[in-house]
Image (tube, rainbow, N blue to C red; front, top):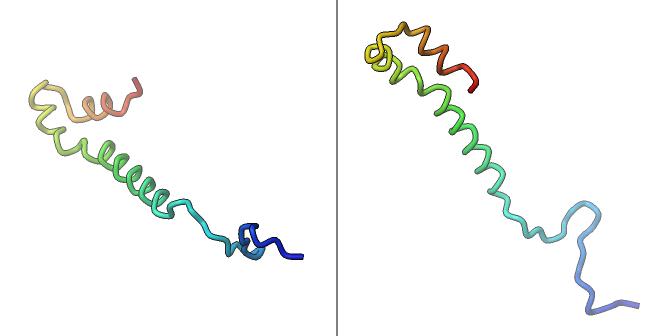
Length: 69
């Protein structure tokens, strides 16, 4: 006997209708990679101005930036 009111289901192979957005995970991955890159690789750009302004060697400012708070 067939129930006409039951929702259709796909086979075990996963052919059912999916409602979750597929672009969310790749977008979050790109966002994380970009933000980490900006935080860790952008420091050498202002480092010469920082060392000149405070009168410390480059190694000291890099070490201070790299130290955990």
